[in-house]
Length: 134
Image 1 (cartoon, rainbow, N blue to C red):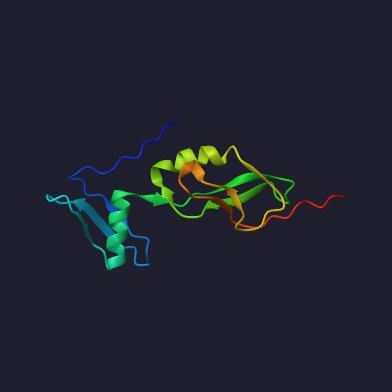
Image 2 (spheres, rainbow, N blue to C red):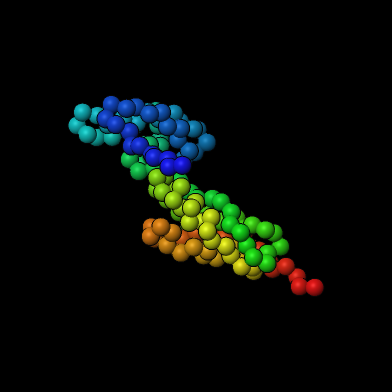
């Protein structure tokens, strides 16, 4: 299943809920006649920047799990070090689904370096001990 993320067209006014602070301002973000991005509804300057970034180049953290060999649990939680472009999330999941780690692993260990050639690593979100051999 191929999912395509579409950029808003000129004239579109999507409502975006700002997640920068607990106020959850409802932003209206649009491009004016001069081609400038306008943000209405923000309670602060950080909300304005968030709205512009979300409109022009939305990004998300990749948070998932991978298989782990010889771990005390069957899967290891992982995340991207920083947010990745939203349109790359499904491609990133395809890569992650084909990777496994081997216990022991320490929180912060790089599991996948340079994900999708983005210069972003996928790291372990927790430490995982190896099973005790009896």
